[in-house]
Amino acid sequence: MKRLGWVTMSWWKKLLGGGDDSERVDYYEEGLALLQEGRFHEALTSFRLALKEAPGDTVVLQQIAIAYTRIGMTEEARKTYRHVLQKNPDAAGAHYGLAYLLLHEGHEGEAATHLEAFLSNAPSDAEAQEHISHARSTLARLRGEVDASVSGDE
Figure 1: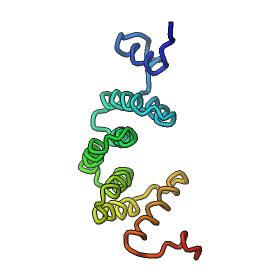
Figure 2 (figure 1 turned 30 degrees about the horizontal axis):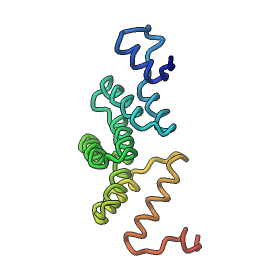
Figure 3 (figure 1 turned 90 degrees about the vertical axis):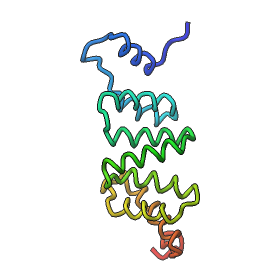
Figure 4 (figure 1 turned 180 degrees about the vertical axis):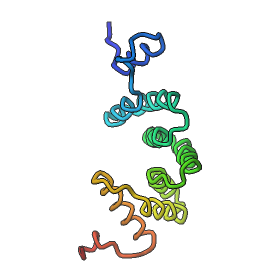
């Protein structure tokens, strides 16, 4: 008999009401782990369950948009990012994700606007630095500016 994965088991426990609060599943954390593993459909399921526990949570919605993007559901991802921005116009992650979706579709002007919004509100942690650099170089390219990191003039 094939053993059920931990995600499936946690989902069944929740569905069937098994376990106590000490066994309570953190669906958001589960979704993040699944994204890391490249299990995007399973991550989406976990994030949807997390959203049921915290309706309208913009952090969860952004992770849903990321999962949509990774499985090729870019229209859904775009709608989700826009929904986040309606709820929180300063959501840097939504601006970043939406910018690259728009750029991929050839909407450079709107993408640049979202990159600018991301950069004006970018997180300051070390993890964000790669995204900030990527956004800056992309914006410079869109503006026709020379990017110092490409030209070697740093």
